[in-house]
Image (cartoon, rainbow, N blue to C red; front, side, top):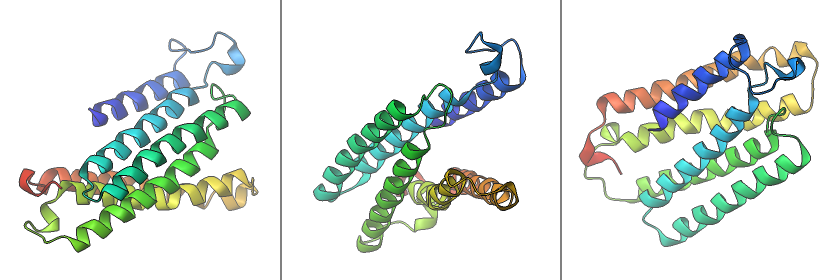
Length: 188
């Protein structure tokens, strides 16, 4: 479901930005604004994965922490929406906070995987590959977001776009690899 949702979000974002037939706003100054669908997508993405990790976690303390982090993530997006209009601005502060929380949750997942007795090799564990992909992206994403927030000159920012695109490619590549070689028995 998440793959389909991601695909349609990207497709809709493309059409809104590059086609005059898909508009959220009738005002021509904002006709190309598609940021709201990505803001909504990112909140859903974080909450979805927080719930997945909460269900996969065996430690009750970690499960409780993830639940609180989910609430804190939503509150950070609400606060960001109050400060900056989410219809026209990225919810960068919410994205940064959610990213840091995601990295923390993934680290907790990896710690549990290291401590548990392995019945299946990790190379067959889809959740391991998804976590690895998310870790690659969400480790770099908040750093790049902060650099853009600090509004360095374009000469500095231009070096980070290829890094962002590479991390996106690596994330999806690791997830696809996991989908291809993962086995149901090794999911957790």
